[in-house]
Image (cartoon, rainbow, N blue to C red; front, side):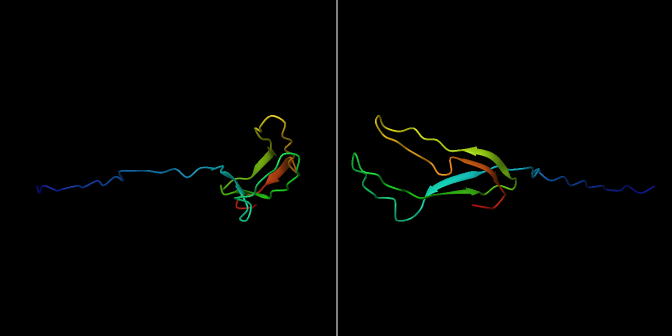
Length: 86
């Protein structure tokens, strides 16, 4: 009878790739240093990106703002943003 050697190799890490939801909101270039003067209206443009791998639905935009400020998002509601879209 001969002796045999059996080697079992198991990975040290296993990563399960599941659904990933990742939403990014950024101010478009050119708006980083805009001065907003009290009583003056300014329009700032933002970009929302779904950089995850699953669609995001029912996105509502709102903000904390200083007293006396009015912040209006248009649109304030996004019904669906597909994976990889903005």
